[in-house]
Length: 227
Image (tube, one colour):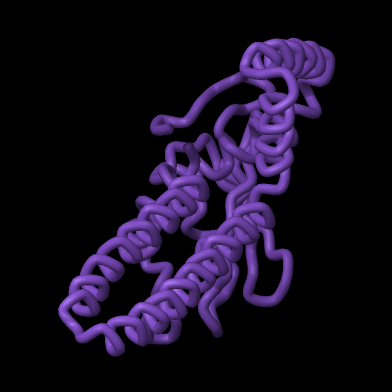
C-alpha cells in the first residue's frame, strides 16, 4: 500500500474511532436525562452524528481526489483491478496482471533506450542528487570558499541534477554578485570532491550555471575515485 493509500486508510480509521467514542459518551449522557430531554438529546445526537459523518466523508473524498490527481495512472489501475475483481473474481485479476506484465516486458525489451530515458535515468538522477550531491553540498562549497561573495556569505543553491551514461549535469543558482570564474578556478577540486573524472563549468543565464561532472570518459572508460 502506497503513501496515499495509507493516508486514505488512516482517515477512515480515525473517522470510525472518533465517531464511536463520541457516540458512546453522548449516548451515556442522554440515557441519564429525563424522558423529554432524552428524546431531544437523541434527535440532536442524530443530527450531530450525521453532520460528523458528512464532514469525514468529505475529507475522505478530498484525500481520494488528491491521490487521483497525484497518481492518475495508479488510480486507473486500481479502478480497473476493482472492476475485474467484481466481474471475474481474483482469478481474472491474476490472468490480466500476467498478461499486462508480459506485454510490459516485451515492450521494455523492444524499447530499451526509451525506457532508460523515461524511467531509469530520472531515477538515477534523483538518487545521485540526494546521495552524492545534496548530502555533501554544504561542506564542499564552504570548504572551497564558494560561499564568500565580497566578504559576505551566500549559499549557492543546488537546483537539480540530470544524469546519463557518462556525466551528471548539476544546475546551480549562484548568490547575487558571485562570478562564474570562481567556480571555474575550483572546478578540478569540485570534481575530486564528488568523485568525478573532470568538471566543466558553463553559464546558462545570469546567476545560473551548469556543472558537468564526467563520471566515465567516453574514450577510455575511466571512472572517478568516489561514486
